[in-house]
Length: 185
Length: 258
Image 1 (tube, rainbow over the protein chains, first blue to last red):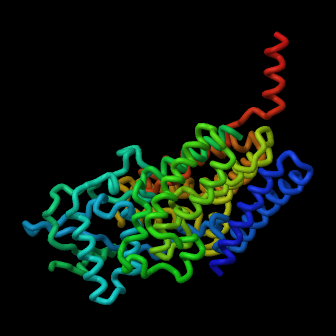
Image 2 (cartoon, helix red, strand yellow; image 1 turned 45 degrees about the vertical axis):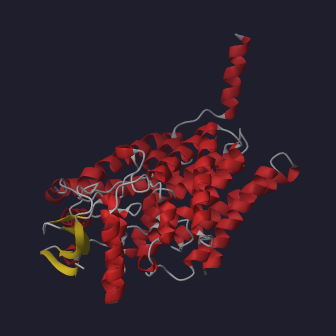
Image 3 (tube, helix red, strand yellow; image 1 turned 90 degrees about the vertical axis):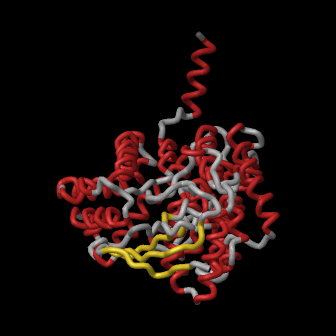
C-alpha cells in the first residue's frame, strides 16, 4: 500500500515534469490535460472517498464530535530540576519536534512502551535538556518562526542547563492530573 | 504564475527554516519511531543515510530560494516539491496521524509541482494551485460530515470543542464561545459556509472576494478562541486577483501607444 501511495504522487510529479519538458511541443497540450485530469481525479479520490493519498488529501482533521469532551485525555512532560522543582519541558530540549507532537507521541507510544524502552527514551530526553542550545534546536527566525499548530503553554528555552535530573509524565483529564511516569536515575 | 510560485516557495521556506534540524529526527532513538506504521519509510523514500538527508535538506532550502528569485524556476520548483514530499511527514508518522495536515505544507507540495510545469502565461495552473489550497477546506468538511454528520457544525459541538481546547490549556478566551450560543452557532455555520465556499472561490473572483477574507478572519479568530493556528493561512494570498496575461499585454500595449 505504501508503494501505491508513493506511486500516486510520483506519477503526478512525472506528469508535471513531462508537461514542463514538452511545453512548446504538440504533445504538451495532451500532457497539460493529463496533469489537470490526474490532479482532479486523485484529489477527488482522496477527499470524497477519504483515502490517505497525501499530499492529495482527505483532511480528516478534528472531524470527530466533541460531545464526549469530558472523556478527553492528554499528556504533558515536565523536567525535574536538581533542587527538586519541576517545570514544563522546554521547547528547545525537544527541537525540532513540536510540543504538540511530543505530547501525542507520549499518548500514542511512550506510555505503552516496555519499562526498559521508557527509561532509554527518558534518559535521552534528560541528556538533551542539559545540552547547550545550538543552531540545531533554535530557529534562526526567532519569534517569526512558523508556530506549532496548537498553542501550548511552556517555556521556549530551558532556563538552567545541566540542572535537569529527571522527567515526569502527567496524564491530564478534565477533572485534574495524575503522574503516570517518573524517571530519576 | 510567478507571483504564486514565489508565494508558495516563500511560505514553504518559512516553515522549513523554522525547523533547521528536521533531518536530525532520523537519528533519534528507535523508541520515538516505534509508533510509526510499517513501510512508512518506503512511502516517503526515507532510505538514505543521515548525512545524505542533511544534504537533501540544504538542497531543499536552496531550491526554494532559487524558486523565489527565479533562477531555473521550473527545475527548482519541482525539486522543492519532491523534497517537501520527502521531509514534510517526518514528525507526524510518529503519532499515527492520518497525514501531516497541520504542518501547513500540503498545498505547497502540489503547488510547487504545478509551478514547475506551468507555462508563464497559462491560467490553468493558477486554477489548480487555488484548488490545492481550497480542497483542504472542502474535503475537511466532507470528513466532518462522514465522521460526525451535519451536527459537527452545530453550536453545541463548537461549544464542546472550545471546552476541550480550554481544558488542554491552549486558549484563555474559549469562554467567549462557551458562554455565547450565538457566537458558537455563528462559528459553526460560518465555518461550513467558508469551507464549501472556498471551492467556488477558486473559480469566481466575486466569491473569492467574499469567502477568502472570511477565511482569514476565521483563522485569526481561531488563535485566541481555540488556540489553533492554521499554518497554511498565508496561502490564501493565491486567491488575490492576478492580472490575466491578455490584460497585461493590453495594458503594456496601451502604455506603448501612449
